[in-house]
Length: 203
Image (cartoon, rainbow, N blue to C red):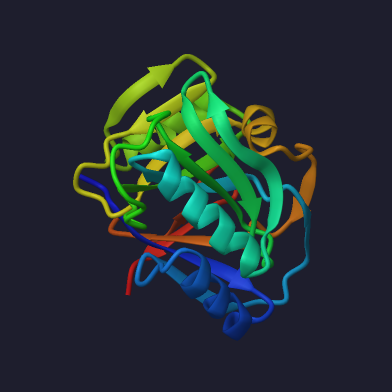
């Protein structure tokens, strides 16, 4: 089964970005950094979610991200589906911090249960078919709105969202142009998907 091992974020200042991700989320290995000066503006068409077990962990990561220089896009609060908030890192990457639980059951462990890459796509059916043809297995599908692939063998799960819908969830305008600023590292080879997201073998 096709898996994702890491995400490479293309940033203007890798040293500053590394400091941010270490201080904010403690990520090591799953997120890599690459220097890039490619122009990009507006919504870059993807978000990364850190899924945790309870609200206090969301709050811990949220506060650490803001202290490290992130911008709040949506405050951390309860919703119909659980508890969460959205921040934008100094390099421009949008991070969703989420828990399906609305109540704490223990101390803030700073433990990340899942990392999920959400891609905003223009044609859900075509992109879903594209990824199925490359070995990904659909776990959940809600018509043209959302597709979640099986991530049981993957360090990072992959989901598809309509671009406008994902931008709304993130709290930003859907317009954007230029580089996505992202390379997906996995075992599916080198290719570019219908929305311009680049995959390459994880080194």
